[in-house]
Image 1 (cartoon, rainbow, N blue to C red):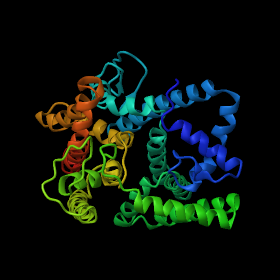
Image 2: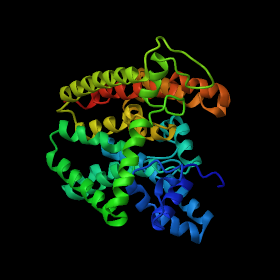
Image 3: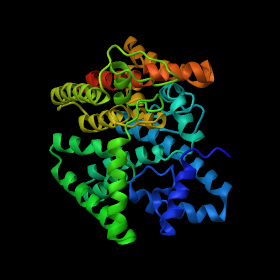
Length: 374
């Protein structure tokens, strides 16, 4: 429990906000100003019990991860995940069932990244799924507020906005934008105009200049930077094909993302009559978050999990499941646990995690609808 990961940064950000000290004086605070406000309760609770707070947070991660599995299996397949080793009910999935156990083990590295660093990303994914359910139950305003709060906490869920435009969910989009306005007003109310302007200016500059080509950044942007510029992602290791400027590699990244978006949009349109098409398209869009974000740590790849669960269930009796299993095994067995720190760093530099995740998302775009198209 001594290892805090980013969690200590959350507590520190809350402390600085509560005491009205410059929030970006803490080097770990690289998040939007709204994040510092919502982490204030963590600072209060940390003062009561250091270990107690971290234990509760850890238990919460496990519960949230469990509910991500439950949501996916029930939403798409009407299967209930139960806390039993075995079950005879046809509409239930037990802990020893391959439909749970295989995706859990295949994404175990991702899960370990979350719990070992006491990350917030599992909670954010869980809330993204909750927001979807709220919208489906015509509680669109509340769904928009939830999504906006997530975007104001960590920017990467903003990928949902173009998805809502593409799907013509304009009411949902409107309430999300209203929610973003509310979060900004709350920041203004708490910090005041001068500090808010200062913090927003710092954050925008940090986002603009914070692009990082090293192997810790597992985004597509960083991998393309290593492939096309004379930039070492780790320990003076180069694998570049050309020596373009870093700014030029960004254009290549944008081009790849644009082509991928066209490919995905085409298949979304082709499968617009498929059963559960909106939910499938939603989780596929979420799965692109770690690859498309300019900055993506390994813990961001938790957004791939719902797609993995759904795809494995779909393909469990098909040879096509190996198109899912093999890239997941590459992600898992390239970890420090199996090949050591140095070799793992080299595999991360070469894009094992990035490219495997990208492939799974694209594969899901074509394959996940097949058995559900009338």
